Image 1 (cartoon, rainbow, N blue to C red):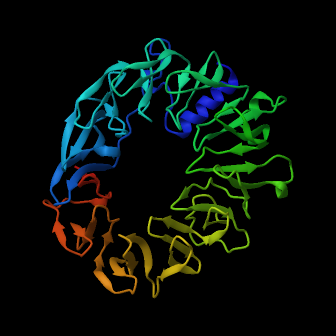
Image 2 (image 1 turned 180 degrees about the vertical axis):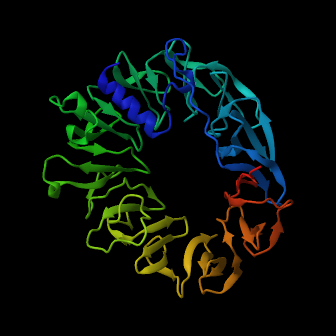
Length: 467
């Protein structure tokens, strides 16, 4: 595999949590010395919306995935389970991914297969590696090291001749054969084979493709300034000529770009391309993180050295960075002056550290709620209420600041499925949006967090009790 093919495979797989190898690496030739097992200072369990313990607080780790899949670790041993009707059922596999298109990828003993939503093994554990289903198909790798594609019944529809393959997106799958990048259709035909050095997934009929500068030294292969990126359609035509130093994966019809060529930072800028109209929008400020549009807006993070350094390093990037929101024209609907923000389907929560300020905007940028007298807005509940903290206690009020749930909780978590974890006077409760409480069936010492409810259950995190 040539260096640029390795690059595109690494970028695509690492960015999307699909790193090859892992437990399925060449076990005969690769030896990794055993590492000491990490011992968490926390224990985990699962509680249902009635406060009953579904899984006891005995696990080292619990992870909830799409469709009710649960991966657990106890004493260093991995196992997976499935939640149905608030009941947790053990599955005979080491691990699993979440359900996508009614199939979940499962693994045991170094081999992969797929189960249906009832937990039945639909596609046997035949493959060394595999990906989740997308558009009715999944890339899988056999023991010989080559990749092919199967349908949801397990029928092999693409021969196992590819160095690697990615899931279908917008009707095409990216792969490599004989160290060349190609795109396949759902019948297995190679429909695009080009001279690009790197490329991404198709979406909205387009995909980003990149060309490495011919004189770029090998140690700078990951340097964006050594690349020119454009957008290609499904015929192979470049509808946006290679010009940008980077174009991110297309999300919701929008492709974010950066232009960092040249030594003068004043000539560096960023923006996005509307893939439907091909309108190129240049942003007012050079953003630090890639903005992803949801609900018609996108969060941006920009350097603001003109503003005072905050009291806390809440951005995780730097003291001068501030957050705001733009619309699809690139206009600020919320100016980038905030240290912390939270986007929801009902609105945008923003907070400043200095001076302390907590605000809620609608998705058009209109101010709809302002925290006053020390009130800090923590979340929007069902589009009708504000979850808040004041004087160290949590409560819920309406947009007129009339309390729906009095601020009596040491902590009140995020509402999901109409329920949240509340803790007061050292006891844990399941609280609904009207403030009705259901105590935990058995009170457990040391509970520090409860995740939002999913499928009628929630993961509980507690400190371990020392002997």
